Length: 59
Image (cartoon, rainbow, N blue to C red; front, side, top):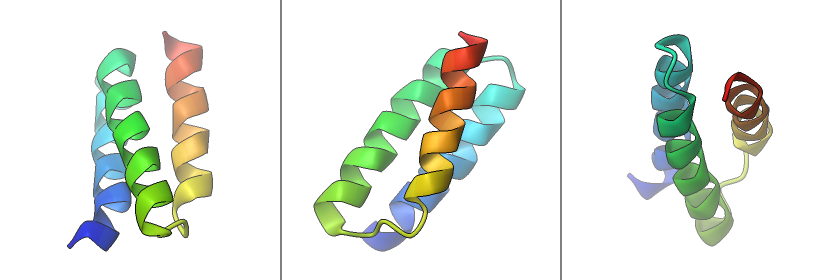
């Protein structure tokens, strides 16, 4: 299940962004990026980085 965590955290972060909670989104995205780096599951990393930029913009 660990290989899906970056994706699932990214989806959750998207919801936080839409709810106007960029801080919560940034926390989840940081965790997702750490997991992606540790597990070499980087297929979703570009979207995670895009979401992080969006959350930083909305901060």
